[in-house]
Length: 115
Length: 112
Image (tube, rainbow over all chains, first blue to last red; front, side, top):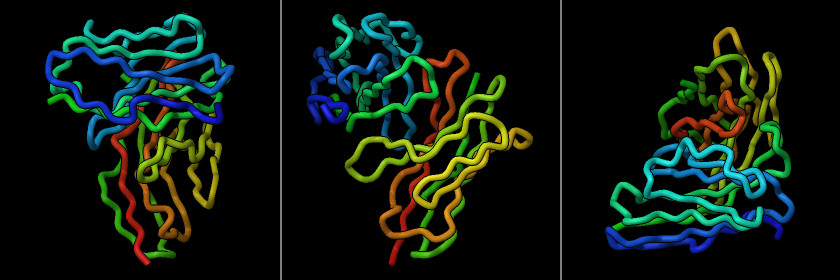
């Protein structure tokens, strides 16, 4: 597609519920990133994939967070047993290269609200 | 660890005023530096970047110069427009080269 697509745009979850957030990167983009943006803050890195390999997951805040990209294209970020502090906008970005100087294209994000 | 500090907002200006948004960083070595912009209801967009010391990034009338002496990358524009109203984020690439580290963002509001 023309851009990075994320779904759903908005998600309301009850505390303790599991959620799955989807990212469709730009076709052919090798690198895919997930970021978490709390209200009034800058995005914070969660994890990085190069094709299907998860090369960096140092930003995942707990073992309730899990990400996958099994075929090297679409990625899913799963949050188990959601808690109120998980409320944030989750951003996905993709890049055509593996070197950091390639431009990232961000999606519009999924706004997760845990009630 | 690596970090980015940018000036607190909101910044409120009249159209055609001069804009400066300060950004300083702490990092090992000389990472690439970026400014991203987030317009209301839209995703983050790369505004400009600089990859080495003394480089000047520019785009849409915005400029920023990579100053290693002062570890700064301040964003400037000579004459802002109402359409520049947005949140601006300063960022750097982490040492591993795998992630962007962002500042907290500065909201710019321009009135006519």
